Image 1 (cartoon, helix red, strand yellow):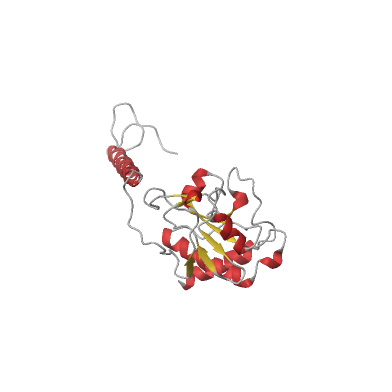
Image 2: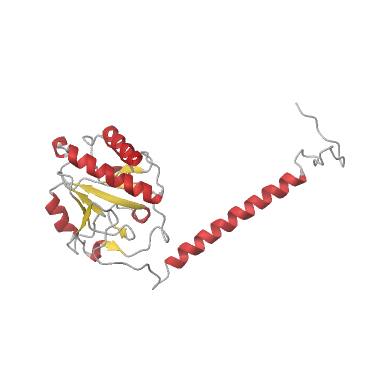
Length: 226
């Protein structure tokens, strides 16, 4: 056990009566100040990108994932943004369409639907991008998660495991690995989640038949191969 210092006395290393050196206090204060300054700078940068009229240049029909084909969603089903500069991206949300690929594309192009995901993956592995990753898609049913995530829909029904084909798992895993690599998202189940795991969500997808173990192994393999 250490001994207590006497009042007004100094140790050989210049320690205060509490056993904490003045140097440690100064260093701790400097680190705190630097951290606060970095946080303030980050907030200012994000606030700048949220100002009206401040936006990144875009090319119509451009995709974020080279293997995807552009098929635009209705502008009513997403919000223009400049992610990750205005809102950081730290999640991928997995969905199941509860219908066909064609029906999902159709409703996402319907301005009255009020929802859409960034990507839709077909059973044969075809990937359609409907919203730029820059933008906030209305897919999670939670504003904060919409702003911080990329949503991927998968053709099929939650109660039909046969809908989740090897081609679909593989194509989706490569897409998710690319998204995670682009934004530095950890490849784990805390950051790659199902719609059902979004706070406040009233959906059950991707359901009990979605093979998470198989999927995560494929995502990790795709990540290593990048």
